[in-house]
Image 1 (cartoon, rainbow, N blue to C red):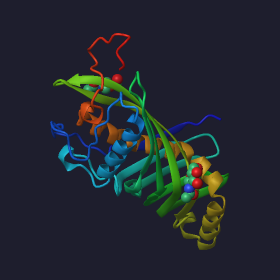
Image 2 (cartoon, helix red, strand yellow):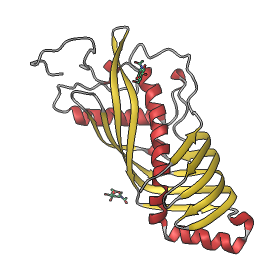
Image 3 (cartoon, helix red, strand yellow):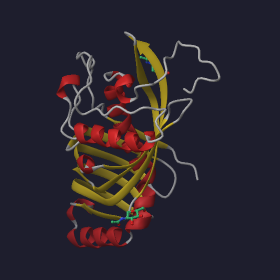
Image 4 (tube, rainbow, N blue to C red):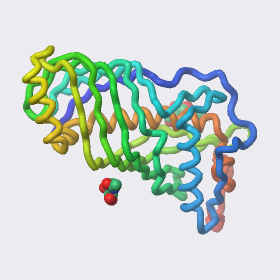
Length: 263
Ligand SMILES: *[C@@H]1O[C@H](CO)[C@@H](O)[C@H](O)[C@H]1NC(C)=O
Ligand SMILES: *[C@@H]1O[C@H](CO)[C@@H](O)[C@H](O)[C@H]1NC(C)=O
């Protein structure tokens, strides 16, 4: 099936004038690549990063990850089971602060990150304006809405390039790819059909009863939203945090390594 998805998320993270961390901040745990316990260490280190991102890092101009405020999301999706023209404004996402890191791996050659996290309960609320079809049901309306996915497991593959600055090695996260599964979804759209109450109630009930196909149909939209959010946060974080503080023996991009060197 071909999706023509156009999604616009208003840039969350403004330009920063802050300077990068010159000394290791307290929320960073340093791991050693050559250490056989690296994966375990890295999992704890990434957990500490998420714990610090929750309340925000004002010193590098990073807003709170929980609650996360997104001024607007615009969705235009032509084909497929979801046929949606939607706007979501003044969006507030809560739950990322309780993120549990389950796995963290770093590719030994490319330094790409592979991370698996679990978000027990997430809530997305905002003001919607919708005209389209979900599960073949034509939906029109505008008003308040919320979505609550539970037990979300997210696999994130991040493409990383290394660069050098002031003798440090930095991670340039160039893209992120997300796959997720959820254990449940509750949702509510107020004022569907511009307030025809009986239709609003039956439709909301139907969407909740059929949460699995509903969540499948929202997958491209939600995947892209999570990708954009995580990428924005990772880019700001790692452009301001020398990779050497995370991985003590991170390679130096300009150095030529012999085959016998374990890098
Ligand atoms: C959450 O989802 C994972 C993976 O799908 C599953 O193994 C686990 O049992 C679920 N946990 C809860 C509390 O539902
Ligand atoms: C990061 O990678 C992007 C895409 O390859 C590139 O345009 C950008 O200049 C890189 N940034 C740094 C600081 O190397």
